[in-house]
Image (cartoon, rainbow, N blue to C red; front, top):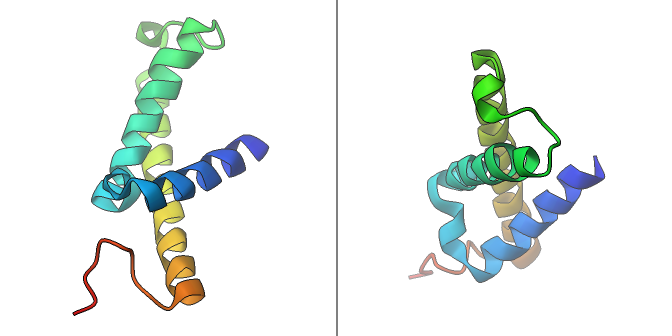
Length: 95
């Protein structure tokens, strides 16, 4: 749980400074996180078997899970930002 919370807060902080990370309402960040963590880092550290040995359902589960997770984080981040500041995201013109 702490791992997820740290990543969610980190995403929110990065999204404020580098708004392009929010592409596809956070879905792109979810895909990138899935690739970087589950396909590169975990196998390199020996925490999971090699990617080629994973069953298909594991690939689908991780991808769909990360997509929904980051999309949810982005929706909540955007709503909280609007409620706290009374303004939309910084890159959205107010005119």
